[in-house]
Image (cartoon, rainbow, N blue to C red; front, side):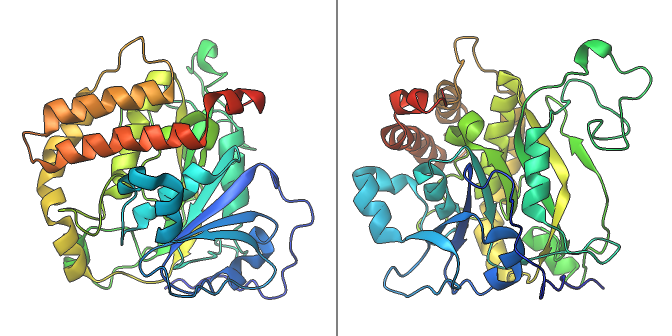
Length: 363
């Protein structure tokens, strides 16, 4: 059995890493009391809270946090007709926070995620570990059997090509979870009491050409490098599928990272996932996705982007065309999703003009 860490009495870090370069994005339908536990680690940073569901409901945020809060009315006001690309009644609404942020890095976390503790009992500063992951290179072109060779106490093993030891820039840091695992509904149903108590003290780069099931509850990324592709899809209310939003984004970003020569890391940091969602509700949301993924995953495995696609936006538009061409026969929903992908890029570019990015040194 694992328990969350006790952070009472821990002091707020007076010199937090990347304080002015990182936003924390949180999707929610409830009061954010969970931030009290995270105060020692997250309070110095700016929060972007995206309120899902009823926009008239008052969301309480603990005192001392610097934040901006957006609800559905704000999304409609800011994006106009393009607001249709932002999912409703689904955690994919967090993507709006990615879009309106002006920072280089994003850390996103769910409101049922608490501070984990490592095997020694020490509270895990998940954000600090994500930042360390993002600021050191990845090794997608050749696997190092000691996992991350840039970590203290590790190095490249014998036989690792010296020409590849410089690595590539890391675009995404994917963290894991103690207590409630990120299972699909069928697995939840057959293992209702299973808990993850295993803390693996390792970070690894996901190899080039390999997809992974990305979970959005404990995730950080370089917004400048991969932000326009971090679209969690059109899911949730009114759509035939849910709970595949973060995985859709993960498949897309991995294809694009491989094409552009960027890295994706997974492993540390852990968070404590406090509650399991209802497996019967989840099964209803996932039902079609369970069948569709057997076609979707081979599609992404075989997706090849052109040499002309040199920006994330260009890559994403190419992917959207492939989705329309290859997956629309699976279900008309994918034609709608492909259109939403294009709308997302258009909305992103309107709020983040390339000229403005260049002026800020982001191009």
